[in-house]
Image (cartoon, rainbow, N blue to C red; front, top):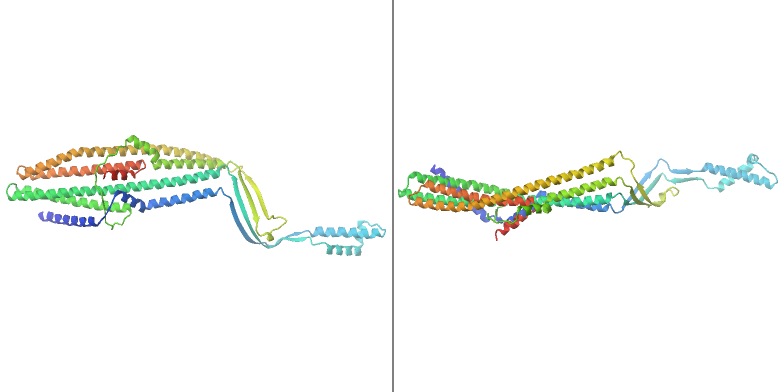
Length: 492
């Protein structure tokens, strides 16, 4: 049994020395630095930063809807045959009619009148007249569009009135930007809360390890005293054995808590985004600092600083704009347009103009009741957001109350423990003096040491719970960074 305890003691000493060497070389970080590292290195924060940039560009897109749209289009086309306008039948009829008139006129000059039928019977004269007219008249056949032709044009459209759709879309896009900013703030708050909690856990374990080491030194001193008294014949052997057992138990408690501190440090590194191989340590200890704010102050402040409330307000704005967009579908759509052809040589001048401008007005008459359904959907969405808002206010208020009372309970427990610590220290002093004079037992000293150790550990836990609840409280009202101000103020 004795060899086991000696081996455990040697192992503890080696670990303590190794830990001390690591801590001496470890980088000391403050609470502010831990939070800065966490926010800077957190992937979720980067994700919402990218989402914010995305929504900002969507907002620029909404601005662009108010400006004219200009499109340049071009094509090369091949038809199965050229587009031809053929009026040769009209030309033939004109030639025939003119030839008859010329023959009649020729005979009339000779004093002979001919009817149209008689003139048509004069074959030679008719043929000669028709040939002359055919040579004089141009062809009545024209190629309107070649079989291969090009098209290229500028088309500009400027919306004038779309029933308020453009304004609603712009407000919706701006609301999405605000929502993305609030979500980013909310994410940063959550990362800050996690970083503070991890930091406080390391601070707590540092203080507890310090307490365990102090208790171990006290137990070792008691063991040395017990050995001396045993050699002098003032105590029985079992009392010295009890002191040895107490030392082994203190070593085991120290060993366990040092492992817990190592795990807390690993968790802190993971939270702040540092590699596990990088040696760090915290530069603080748990010291009480009071805050003057009351519960009513926290509840009122949450109305303006809680990101969830702000996010719901923006979602309500988005729902209202969706309702406005649905309403705009019942309104006429008005726009001006213009088109300019930049390849005039391939146009059909008879049918296709070089440029055109106009005013376009359109309104949907019937769409299968889709517009009405969209209106009802938007109205129900607004009511849904109203219920979400009411539920969020109730739950956040409950969370603030819980965290405030948890913080108050931890503070009260801390103050009550101060008198217990004074009594436990005095009790240990008296039991140690009685043991040294032979009036007390080793068990009395060990019990007094364990009572003091328990009160000191509980005292540190009370401070940890106090600051942990305070962090949760500040997060519940949307300002977790205030815990850094409180923590830094306690050091002054």
